[in-house]
Structure formats: structure tokens, C-alpha cells
Length: 179
Image (cartoon, rainbow, N blue to C red):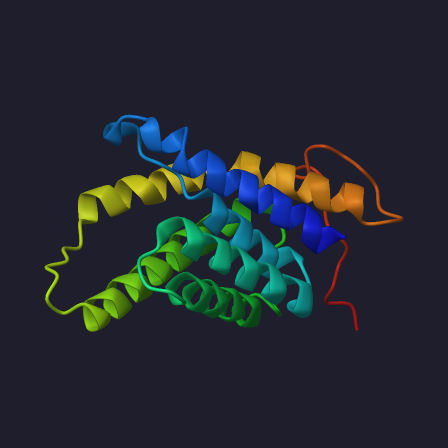
């Protein structure tokens, strides 16, 4: 049931970022809300649920973007597994600690998309725009805090037997490093 809820949330995020947020002026940027959901899934969901969610959201992004079939599922799964492996033993459960993780993974994902696209379409002149990438990173860093709070609240609501505080910034997760 949790995968279904997050799949609906991912669909709403994708619709929001391709319609309303896409019509914003270029200087305001367009945050990638779907990518934030993938990072949240990598840090808060178990391996199977998160991988299925990343695959389904990648397929959904492929339907909306239509660049190369399989590009987004491959990239999202790669980002998911790298984040899952790197945060397995680290305490990255608080929202403020995940901002650098989002920045690094967003650069990694966009770099992978750029390299794969340039390999598959060598005749297309692709340029890497650092100014727009820096703008996107700053926007994603700001937007991730309320988005992760909403995603965490939804996860706590859908998980039986857990508390339901709206702002998980103040609450501390249990110690998962106990012997």
C-alpha cells in the first residue's frame, strides 16, 4: 500500500513539475520533485519497495519525457542503489543531513543522463550549463526540506503502529546502530 501511495504522490509531483512549475519564469527554476521522491525512497524505504518505486517512477518519467526509452529508469535505479548502499550504515535520516546528499546525487544523475544521451545521440550538440545546474541545485536544496517533511509525514501515517507528528525535523529517529 505504501508503494501505491508514493506512486500516486510521484505522479502528482510529475504532473506538477511538468505543468505548473514548467510555466514559471526561467530565473525561478523548476525543482525536480520526482527526484526528491527517489532520494527519499532511497533513504527511508526498504530495498525492495524503494527499488520498485524508483523503477515505476522512472518508467513514468520516460512516458512524460520521451527522450530515450529506459534512460530514466536506469538512472533512477542507479541513483537509488548508490544512495541505498552509501547511506546503509550512515545516519542520514534527518532532513537537514540529506541536503548534501541531494546535491551530490542530483549532479550524479544529471551527469549520467548527459553522458548516456551524448553516447546515444553523438550528432546532437549537447552543452552542460553550469549556471542553470547551480540554480537547480540551490532550488532543490531549499525545496527538499518541506517535501521531505511531507513525504515522512505520509510514510508515518501509512505505517501501522507509528506516531504521527507533522514536522519530523524535531523528532529523533531511533538508534539503528545499537549492538
